[in-house]
Amino acid sequence: MLPLQVPGGPELLIIILIYGIFALLPVVAALVALYLLYKIRGDVKRIADALDARDGS
Image (tube, rainbow, N blue to C red; front, side, top):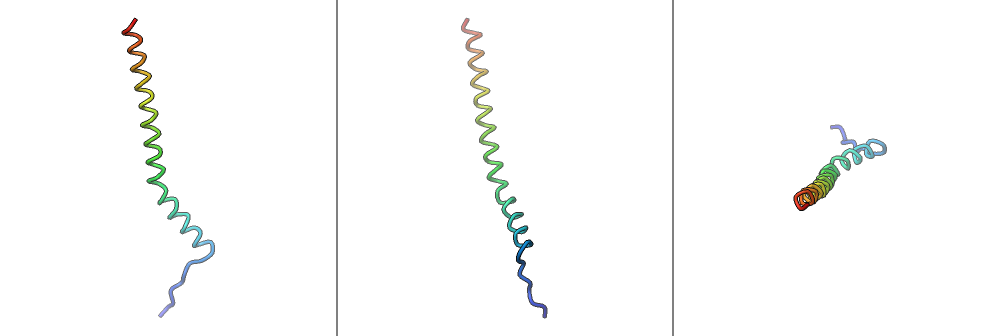
């Protein structure tokens, strides 16, 4: 029966980094989505203001 090897050193660091990157993906995706929604909201407001200015004069 072979003893189980516990990874250590560089292997453990690589495993932790890979898991960390995959764990942060949903957080990054949510932040990007919030930023894009905020940007779209600002664009829609600017378009609405331009239409109001055009129709008002």
